[in-house]
Image 1: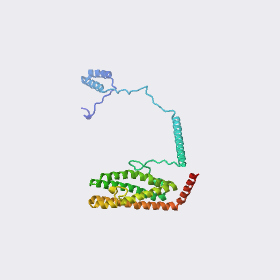
Image 2: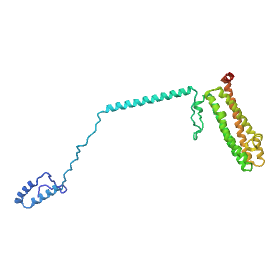
Image 3: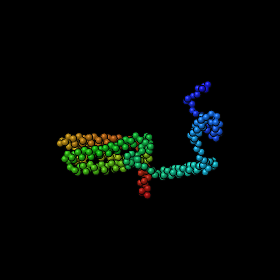
Image 4: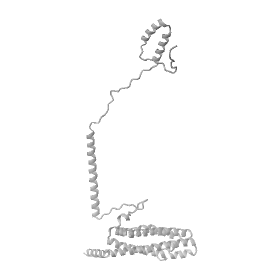
Length: 304
C-alpha cells in the first residue's frame, strides 16, 4: 500500500504526445519483469488518445480583398462642389421668382388663390394678412353681414318648405330656392368682393362701387323683413306680414316666419352700421375728394 491516498475523483492523466511504441518497449520490459499490469496501462492510454479529435483548420480565402478608399478627399471635394452648385441654382431660381412677383405687383396684378371655405375652397379670403389693421374690424363685420345674408336665405328655405308641406303652394318653395341660388353669389360679386378689394387696395373707385351695390343690399333686406305682396309672391319671404297671415291658421309655420323676420331685421341693422363705418372712413381719409377728381378726369377723357 502507498504512503498517501489517491483522489478517486481525479481524471486520468493522459499525455497525448506520448509515443505508443516507446510505451510498448517499456511495457515489454515491464512485462518481462512484472507480469500483465503494463498491458492494461498501454491499452488505456491508446484508447484515451483515440478519443481526442484534431482541431479543424481555419478557412483561408486568398481571393478576399479589402477595399480601402484612397481618394476620400477628392470625393469630398466633388460633393462639396456639387452642393455649392445646387445652392447657387436655388438662389438663382429664388431671385427669378422674386423678380417676377415684383413685376406682377408693379403691374397691379394680384394673384388670388382660392382658400375659403377650407373644406371646399371657392373664393379667396385672407383678412388678417391682406387688409390693413385699421380696416380689419370693418371688413370682419362686412364679412359677418355676408354670412348673415346666407343664413337668412337658408332659413327662408326652411320656413317656406314647412309652409309648403302644411298646404301652401309649390311656387313659393321654388321662389325661395331661386332667392338663395341667385342671392348668395350675387351679393358676393356685387358688394362683398368690392368691399374686400377697396379695403385692401384703398381705392376710391372701388369704395364708390361698394356704396352703390351695398345700398341695394340694404333695400332688399328691409323689403324681405316686411315682405309686402308687391313684387315677390306672398309667402316666399319670411317677413312680418306673411308671419301674421300664416300665424292665424298654423302656429308652427308662423313661428318659423317670425324667426326669419328677426334674422332679416338683424341683417338690415348690421348692414346699415357697416355702410356708416365705411362712409366715415371714406370721408375722413380724403377718398371722397379723390373719387370726385377721378370722376372728373374720367368724364373729361370721355368727352375728348
